[in-house]
Length: 80
Image (cartoon, rainbow, N blue to C red; front, side, top):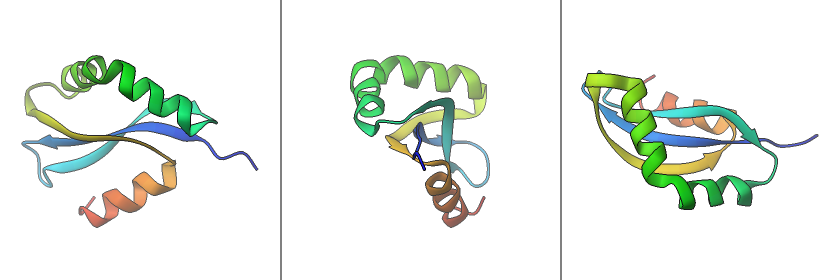
């Protein structure tokens, strides 16, 4: 079975709960490729997430490459 990774952003918003992990829909089968995208496009990704969320967006706390299940687990710990 192939493990897939998604570019995942920890976002601070004005919503409750205020922190949440948001995943891009594009997947990577190589975590290194995903991490390279973060290093190369960090500012562009931040701008895109802010634009997508809109006025409720405050800032990006962190970016990682993780599986869907990892993001679900982390969001559950944050109260989602």
